[in-house]
Image (cartoon, rainbow, N blue to C red):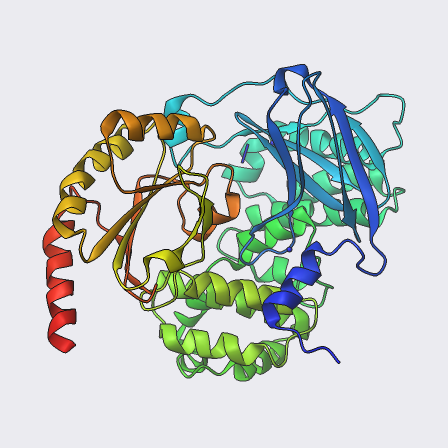
Amino acid sequence: MKVKNCVMTKKFLFFLYFLIPCITGAQNTTIKGKAPDYAGKTISFYTYTEPVVHQKQELAATKVASDGSFALSFALKQTHEIYTDLEKFTGTLVAEPGNNYFVTLPPFSPKSIAESKSPYFEPTLYWLGLPKGNQNDLNFLIRSFVTDYNNEIVRNTSAIYRNFSKETANEIIDRLENKYATQKNEYFTGQRKYYYAELGNTVNPGKADPVIEKYFKKEPVKLNHPAYQKTFQLIFSDYLRQQSMDYRKRNISALINSGNYEGLVSYFEKLGYHKDVAELVILKGLYDGYYTGGFNKEKILKAIDQSQNSVSADLKPIVIMVRNRLTKLAVKGKAPSIKLNNLKNETITLEKYRGKYVYLNFFRNNSKESKAELDSLVTIEKKFRQVLSVVSISIDDNFEASAKLWKEKGYVWDLLDGSKKKLLIENYNAEIVPVFYLLDSAGNLVLSPAPPPSHEFEPLFLKLFRDYRFKK
């Protein structure tokens, strides 16, 4: 980006951890504003609570009134940087527990069709406007520091990025600390600290050890702090795999490929890591290593399962998120649940299709590729309807447009309304469409993702179905 007598399930604990307002010590924070050009639109605020999965945690949402006014509130236990997606912009604000904010949104500027479809488009970060009267607000302090820091980087670009001058980096830090060191706010202190850590990493290319030693090994983890999250991700992304490539650290591969989580923790503690930091590094490494390869995936899951018995309370929600993310779309795993309305405004779940295969697809009306694939589905649906249910989910904001398309085209399979269902889109990795999945008669994923109808889906499905009938 440019500038979540009583025996509870783990999922319920995760829900409690992130969403229940009455968490001990939490206070309500209120966001208000007036933005006439957003009238009728829904805006939501979210944050990130950890640097491993880095999954959005929605805080609150509201519909902007016809006069442009809006107000929402949510419970915070700690200071968080919060965000709101506003088409071409991502609005941001540092919110403190118990505070009330009157904010100004940027002028509404919708993304173009090309921007909406592009996986590379990133909205511009926009500091939400605040009344100028309260210059003591933490936001003004942070914005001042970020501006000064960026100016220092621009003035010293060559020394930093070409010469990797540690002396220049130290001079920048000294100048900034001379200006801001008297500011003792804990959140602001962390902001400076991890900006400096990122700078230190830049002038030590390929040598993260000095930065790890100074800023991470024995320091308390700051899960919710965006500067900590960013620098942690920068330094520890795919860290276990990279470290295991050093023959002197080959024990890492052996420990992972045997699912020995406790052995991994012990290994890093012997290197001087505080236990919480070691576990955070390991969880990040296992999560990344599952996708980048080189390790046994079943043993990674075994290690993650083992971690649930030993990690601190602060890290347990991360373990649950990692486990859910790695298994939610795995072949043979259960497909994420859906509960959506159809064209008759009936509530539909996957249970409706039990007993048949399900060819599930996500689309947008403004996507030519989506529309072409919908046309290709006509033959598939007609030929296999006795054994295969075709189900299309529209994730456009305007479901009426999809309903109109169904009427014009005469499509006969189910159309479901997935508009504004952020969690559904995340669960099915459907940010970029069209995307397809094949489920078996029990609701388990068979092809994840599945090929679209125009790319050899039919012969592949026929083979799978014949193999199924043969085994049966």
